[in-house]
Length: 294
Image (cartoon, rainbow, N blue to C red; front, side, top):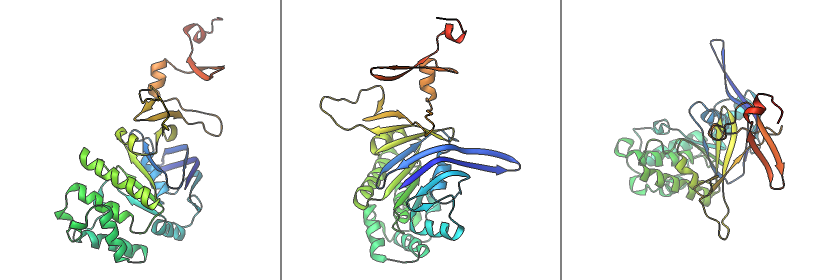
């Protein structure tokens, strides 16, 4: 569904260039549900905007299905946003019209996509658990109900890719669990591919894969471990039943997360040791750093 290779996005303002993405690599399979994590300024929201057709990539490769996000013209970009992708904003007010009801909000989004299907709109209301609120306006809804309405609106154009920017950032833990349950149900029942940007590592156990972005590049992934006899979840390299993997780009480069470098005392160089079990990374000794023969 998604393939990014060497993806670069540079913003220019008042003669200053800001490199938001610098050679990012990412592959997402059709029907997968993943989370993208990273500190503020790491490039995760820029990536979401590129995948959503809101920002044009500067260089590299970025494709969603048959769409080439780098080369498509403005007419194609509009068609892509209308037919292929659904977007849930961090500020759900961007998805909602306050003077319309829940059902009317969904039907209005359908108008923008070119076709109103009232039966499907009612099905979306039911999917997000708001059948009892379909005639309510925005001011009558709680924050969690507004976010669920935003999810329904994002599906109004029957997208094959759903992008969500911090969808649980403004709700309590219980409501966040409800929202993630809705995402999982939609993913399983409709097959829609879902990419969620979040700061919340608690989501790791609720998605198929977690992709960590640092400094505009994909640095590591947490992949759900397959269950096997006698295996437990108390491994040092796992979080909520996931195992962490460093990402190797096409040039053979990997990024070692800062917390691992700090833990191992790795500075400028790292020693590579190949033995019968695989490849090990070790920090330089003080003698090696000083250039003294061992």
